[in-house]
Image 1 (cartoon, helix red, strand yellow):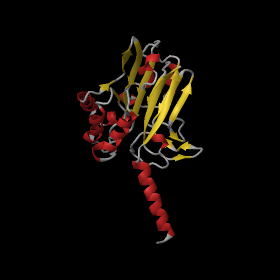
Image 2: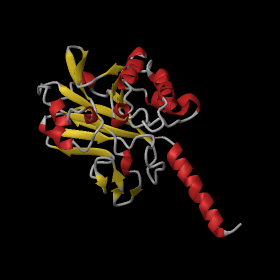
Image 3: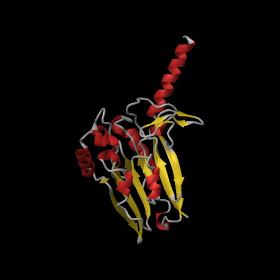
Image 4: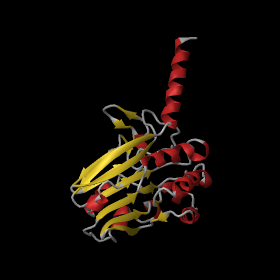
Length: 265
């Protein structure tokens, strides 16, 4: 067999594995604002599934979430893809994880682009998901609270900064689900503690020393693509996500779920 053909086969196998495997990325977030009763609380973030399929009926993805043993699960948008809309395919994983922990959801741009967003939200609510559309809720334990805010994707016509302005700064440690990382300064300006975001697909093609190549809303060589970003008292976690949309393949950018463990200091 010719060397060039062997090389093509190796590249094809590497790309297949790199687009169909799922990595679990573990992040610990420390803060003196986190009540000690929530020390060790574990959050699994699922972002940008884009109607991708991982195993029969999404069992491979569901197993990854089960193995993480979450206390909370955050779905941070683009659960579906507006270009190949298949809601049932993405709901398959929700049905399997809803019993593991409370599940919270915010829209991404693709849900709104379908013009079927009310149906999507209603379908999730019927499964027991807590849908937050520029809304907040709290979880309580032993008299202490964590605050959870969900920001609707700005494709609905309300900019992120404007949506955040309705929420007063409180002493309670605040977790924010918001699809867009490029609006990081808005989260900082409004004093949000910990933001869970996606949208950037890890920059789609990742290169050592350079990071991601391109991301929606940020263009070439985007600033916010993966991992933790911090300014003042605000931290933002950007998931590389799971699926693809307009660009159908990832390079050096394995799909991931993010597992965040809170640590009271």
